[in-house]
Image (cartoon, rainbow, N blue to C red; front, side, top):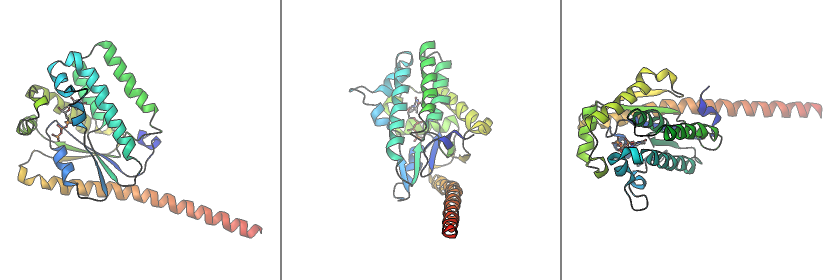
Length: 252
Ligand code: TTP
């Protein structure tokens, strides 16, 4: 069963996925003027200023010390963002999801020995416990859009934006993050809780706007399917009510 079906669902929740530097923020920016869409950018600014410290930078510099702390903090800021935005029927576009934080970033850091066995176990229990609170917050996207790039493209774009915290990030690391995305969204996509649309983001900047058009189309299809379900349910309820009223009238 789709885990999202147990979660409160109003509008469509779409997650834009892809390597560091893939172009997720750029794609989200193109939706900025769209009144039907609420954009949930990753609160990277919060991660860069925890009690006057740049936690994102700290975890890249000393992952053994800070990876666990970073992960718990990054996840919790994402959950609050989801909770605070769920009371509307617009399409919510989120930058990345808990699923990729868990299945890609945490896994890479565990394999690299950046977390102790205890920290790894606490994080596993954290994700498991999150599943238990799904009745209050929808954390599972209804649709994933995977911006697929080569690790080299990701590296070039990451360098071009020059985020200080990422100055130590290597091609080797981005290759592992890339492999994580390929496993999750291509090889094992049948295991995902929701459908995935793969967009080729390994393109020149001038053509990046095509991604926007493709993303709009994918969201439109997902939305109409969902709306259709809602319509059908509403119609069913109306029929039911009318049937019940008829029965009452007849009884009178
Ligand atoms: P990304 O989610 O990849 O966002 P981005 O701003 O790089 O995306 P794009 O360029 O496509 O617009 O990650 C932001 C930073 O946080 C990046 O350095 C990777 C890091 N990060 C982790 O290390 N672990 C995590 O679980 C998450 C969510 C991010």
